[in-house]
Length: 200
Image (cartoon, rainbow, N blue to C red):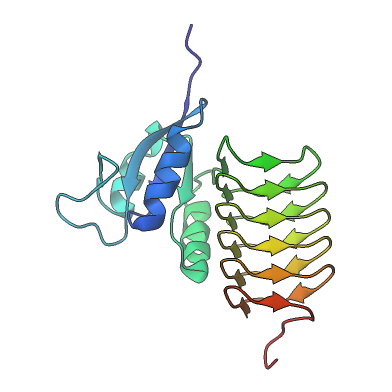
């Protein structure tokens, strides 16, 4: 008997929505229930899945949905939408691509996306609705805050901390124990050797 697949709604029909749909489709226990967007375009689709509408369309399908993941790259918008979903009683679904490596001792929050080739090592903590993008490395004892984004190929060395809604750019390196403050940016390809706070 084929096991039941959790039916996951994808909120966001842009480029990030494509990689989220792909990650869900590669998970044996998950299936895409529908794709919605705050600004649906007539006839638009994501990897062949028609965008069914906006928030009202999602609410109308509540009974057919086991969870929702927010597929929006902008950190603050992703956090806002996730807050609305929680207020409506939806379960936020974490999605881990089968080609990612996640240590059993790591803690992964609700609504998190972990992409192929990413590594999350021992006792790392990933906050709700964060993105660990393709090929990123989150080393032991790191902390990634809510709705933060660790971009493709970025490396967080042991014990580094990335705050809520912060963005670590593609190929950037955050050295051991360094803290990146809330909503702060580590530019692509740079090395953060000291704490990154507002006004630095």
